[in-house]
Length: 387
Ligand code: LLP
Image (tube, rainbow, N blue to C red; front, side, top):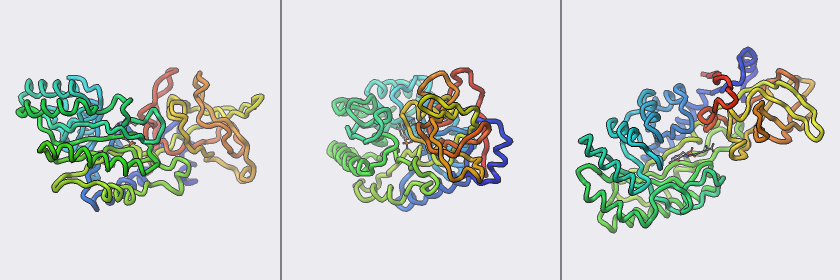
């Protein structure tokens, strides 16, 4: 919750703006780190969730690694304090230029998603007279029970190496050992996973694949099980930090790594979602035929998730006056963009709003700012960082 003295300061700021609670961020990272350390697990922060430099500096300072999906993310991560030897690089469509950046930086591992990609990485490494460390991303065909747009571990998804290509990948690595070193297996089945049985099923699949490699005489040093932990969008105030202890305990219970194998995670949303809110002003109230509309100065251009995934974000009025506390009115809370999908929430119970009221759209720290656009030539974002 945003305190009243900060609301007073926000009243003087230009909106829309991204508000980040850095102390909550620090606490979240510390909790995750402490819980991972208990089992000797390694966390790579998935930079795609939020690449704001202030956020990255806080996370790199606590010693986490980074999970990148583009050459620019790799360079940005290093600029913000992450060390190259702690960076993994995923993505089905890495360009030659991006692969060269990663090779030059000597990153920890390429999470390789196809045989074709493996061959290109090998030939570029040869050309640069260097070696590439490879983690093979395996598609385990597990249903993450989440929105279909953010499901990645099913046969029908473009991600990971399909079973029939795996043997060929292994042969290719073996026959190109001067440039390719197999350092790990990688998995990631989806995002905003709230049914933790999914992680149990993932562990069992990882065990099977680990055995498959052991049967072929290979014990890879790293098992990277990806990210995907869901956060509580409904109640971010009373449940701001994921129970990381319980989360990692699942892996401790169900994964059976071989001696010396390291377990790595790629957490994005669960580290940054709750510390961010999109702050907006009510521009107009429109009482429609069937609906009351609260029209904000923020729209799908600042936070795309509701429009793209029908995602729920808690909407709060920050400028409630005492007389309003009792009564609620139902509003469709919408933005100014020329699309009917530009709606943050339908039938949202709020105190009676008037022009100028400040609205917080909560849990916007992950996949919020990073997915913003200049559609409609919107103005650049403003920020407020709470220490
Ligand atoms: N590792 C890989 C290979 C990934 O593809 C992702 C996310 C992560 C890790 C981090 O997952 P997380 O811990 O954040 O769930 N824009 C969507 C989410 C897309 C997730 C993409 N991959 C949203 O707003 O819900």
